[in-house]
Image (cartoon, rainbow, N blue to C red):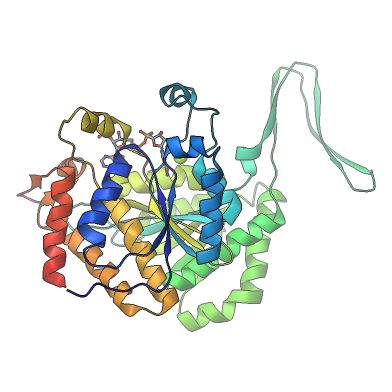
Length: 402
Ligand code: NAP
Ligand code: MG
């Protein structure tokens, strides 16, 4: 068989634990037999991050800027226990945080829909994609415990030294106080990433904040979105037959629940954090949640939304059988290959990605699935398979489609 050719390499970011095991199996069984795979490989496994003083993470992000498309395996974000386990020189920062800071991106998360895995909300027929602004607000806050009898004020010092003061509260009793910020530039990048992604995927986009209560802070988000939409996107949206609309966050939540899906929900940082877990859970399983980081200048990094599945990895190391879901990792690869194909004008690569996704979904719809999906599937006959057997079942169906 002639392998499908690639013009430009993908940036490949390898990772840790069970997902690293899946990474190799998936490439060996489902990618390299069919595609003459070109990648620029970066090992983001914790050991190698430690050996390179985390340079490798920065280099992988810079390569992503150069080539435009990356595919990333889940990685460990070290905590104190990991520093001990891996004998690390330092408690290195979250690789995702580092990459996001360099690419200045927005994270889009969407579930993979499979017949037989029924969402907890029965009206949801199409995926709901959450776009999370990944900068500022409560994630970059400053907070204090306030003793009784204190006065708290917000003080902004302008470049010329003039101060603007707003009273926050005269504390008769003890309490707490918090300062938050965001940046017009970051909000603008977020808006553009959302509008581009909506055009890319031909879906409506909803944006919601609490601007009725937060008349300056949240209102700024609303205004920036509207200005950018009117100036740069309205015509393109009309042409594509898609819609942008703004509503209050309470109203958005109610509408999302009553909807049938098939749109992008743009959320401020905190709303996106919380709502993406709600949406993922309501759709079924973490193993079915995809994630892509899109930068305002059109650079894409694909990954699974879940972590390195540590508990399964320790079983694997003991030689025990594991049944870890590889769907989200598989869709990270197909997402990246398809995008590479689109950018390079190699439709064979896009068609391959399409068929691989189809084969994977078909496998589960045929009743062959990993353990996490067994209790969720409404199929009468289903078989639990181990990590590798699932990939081999997908390969059988892929061969038939090709
Ligand atoms: P996790 O790896 O997502 O796993 C949490 C639990 O969810 C698993 O123990 C498993 O449940 C279930 N699960 C997740 N993905 C699954 C899959 N593909 N197939 C089957 N079950 C799956 O989260 P975590 O245990 O909190 O974190 C582990 C490590 O991952 C941490 O070191 C963390 O830093 C890292 N992490 C990385 C990323 C990233 O790189 N994007 C994201 C999150 C976490 P059962 O054990 O009940 O089967
Ligand atoms: Mg969260």
